[in-house]
Amino acid sequence: MGRVLMIGAGGVATVAAFKIVQNTDVFTEFMIASHHVEKCDRLVKSIHDKGYNVDIKTAEVDADDVEQLKALFSSYQPDLVINLALPYQDLTIMDACLACGCNYLDTANYEPKDEAHFEYSWQWAYKDKFEKAGLTAILGCGFDPGVSQAYTAYAAKHHFDEIQYLDIVDCNAGNHHKAFATNFNPEINIREITQKGLYYKDGKWIETEPLEIHKDLTYPNIGARDSYLMHHEELESLVKNYPTIKQARFWMTFGKQYLTYLDCIQNLGMSRIDEVTYEAPLADDPTKTVKVNIVPLQFLKAVLPNPQDLGENYDGETSIGCRIRGIKDGKEHTYYIYNNCKHQDAFAETGMQGVSYTTGVPAMAGAMMFLKGIWKKPGVWNVEDFDPDPFLQVLNEQGLPWHEVFDGDLEL
Ligand SMILES: NC(=O)c1ccc[n+]([C@@H]2O[C@H](COP(=O)([O-])OP(=O)(O)OC[C@H]3O[C@@H](n4cnc5c(N)ncnc54)[C@H](O)[C@@H]3O)[C@@H](O)[C@H]2O)c1
Ligand SMILES: N[C@@H](CCCCN[C@@H](CCC(=O)O)C(=O)O)C(=O)O
Image (cartoon, rainbow, N blue to C red; front, side, top):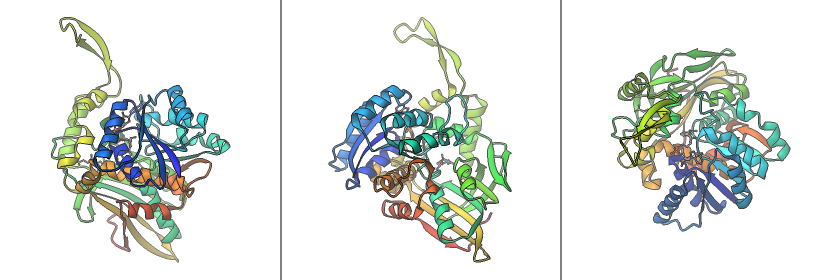
């Protein structure tokens, strides 16, 4: 049905690749390209070792370089490019897609490398260009962003005339038995959670200090967990698309140990994203030194556990969902829609932990929606701009079943 080129071979890409090869009726041709082709080849080997006998091409590309991307896209001619590299590469990959007539999907919005700041304006600015080229770009099709918006769209379509209060709640109650580790790319993750908090209330954005507001929330099959108000990118598009929303917030759980380490990392300057000069010994003559510029957070990434290696000893589960209050037929109702994902189930299927799994499966499902022509319209779109029903059905069938609670206590 379609030829797909996936960029990236990390944790999320590994899960998406496993799901793609389980659906070869839709994904008829498949290439994986990344910074280092050996990493792509290792991923293909792990897929073949699990018994999936699928032909997968691999290639090396620096996704920061539009010319390299254009050369690759022109030779492979994919129908869809799935960007599972880092948010820094979103715009270069979108530029190459426009130049070569390819459609586009990602899971995280663009961030400039030198500024830990995320908002959709950079990618929304491509809307006219994609529209004129007759190409579709689907933004933020992971879990959150991604499924969180499909859940909201599903609530709006089936259960509410008016959504008024939206809380996206993201709990990882897993234990990887490491002192400190992040569950996806450490650089991107630490940039995200050390930013100021932001939420929407009565038409205004309200800023908080990082992780300033928190409260216990109860998660299904898990129990109470301290949950911290953070800024998360999908709030930006959701309040635009559902103007009846009076308040929209995002909450993520963090354990005490995690926060203690995070504090130390920040106080030691290891979360800095500016360059510092370091006098490094020369590899072939350690008596001599050379001045090198390093970014502390990038160095920290090099010494932290690789999120792709956490799966084996990971127990517990994630629980991510939307808690919504609004009006249906003149009466106030509450609604909670969520998925729980066990780290060990994700590991058994893909060798990755639950956070990679909950992101990689929706990326595949969104790509499937595009290739089937269900989510295909020229322009640049967020997930809630499309029909949520077929997408949520695919998630049910592909390892991320969802559950609903009607008129329960939202705690919020
Ligand atoms: N929406 C969500 O729910 C959600 C959740 C978690 C992660 N994410 C996003 O998923 C993406 C992947 O996360 P991950 O944990 O797999 O990261 P990762 O670091 O494990 O993998 C990133 C991959 O991109 C490749 N890459 C990096 N720079 C490149 C370049 N210039 N050219 C080519 N390839 C390059 C790396 O080699 C690596 O294979 C990130 O953008 C992250 O923000 C989204
Ligand atoms: N889906 C999330 C994934 C991050 C989970 C963050 N929670 C922390 C909590 C760690 C702890 O408390 O031990 C994590 O790294 O899992 C996203 O959108 O970013």
